[in-house]
Length: 116
Image (tube, rainbow, N blue to C red):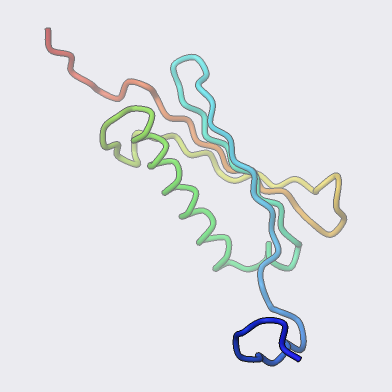
C-alpha cells in the first residue's frame, strides 16, 4: 500500500558517503574593524583531505569578501582583508573530531576619499 499518491521508490541501501561537518559563523565590529570568524568541526579523516581543505579555505575567503562589501558598502580587494591562517584544535565535545577556526579582519575604512 502506498500512503502517498506518487510512485513507489526503492529504499536506499548502504551508507551515504558525505562529509560530516558542523559550521558556526560570527561577524562582529571591534575597534574599527569587522571581525569574521568561522569554526568548522570535522572528523579526522576529512581533515587529511587536501581538496576539502582548499575548497573550505576558498569558501571562507569568498564569505569574507561578501561580509566586507556588506559592511563597507563598496567593492573590496582581497588584499585589503587580513585573513589569518586556519588554526586547528582538538574538539572538546566529540572524540575523533577537530575544530578548525578561520578568521579575517576587515578595516572599516579602506582608502576612502571623502568629498566635502
